[in-house]
Length: 222
Image (cartoon, rainbow, N blue to C red; front, side, top):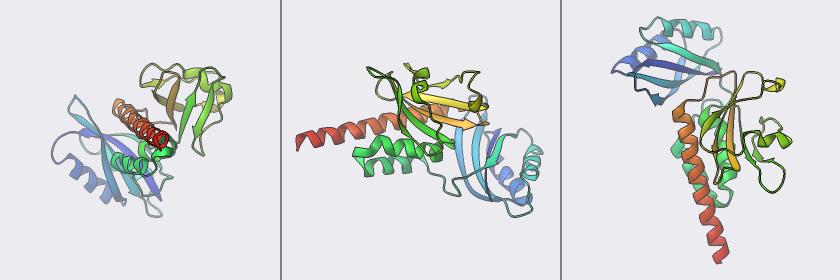
């Protein structure tokens, strides 16, 4: 069974090796490790993709991590995307394979690349706000899609308290070509989106927009 473990640990040589040893001793198999963020306080945040054999509980892994000095488990949860961590470079390759569908590809990749539950492209303007693209697990927003628009800059977004079906959902978004259009990503139950993750989404969104614009220009010239 695949689990995703997010940990904060000292950003010094040997810390990652000690973490891997502790996790292995707890009975878990490490499938992949990705550095999510280097902090200015001498810590790093890593995502560790684990395969837990039958009988090995996540709590055992968490306890093993907490025995290490300076290590804090930020989050552990089932990882429904299986054992395939798709890094940003792979996302770039996927986007460039079909330039005309660049934004569609980006939104579809958001849950895998950012360990989120869903991705959305929302837009407002002359017509009523609406969802333009959505992954299969994304909530239906309808006219509520415009609640975060206009979006001036990449940011974590507040969820209205009266949205009961969104309880414990964390949302972040970035403008997509204009402040009236945005790519959103959401997680149920955490962890909080890091500044580096939001910056990465902004970078990939800008790249997808550029690829899409080039495809449109090529199509207009033929």
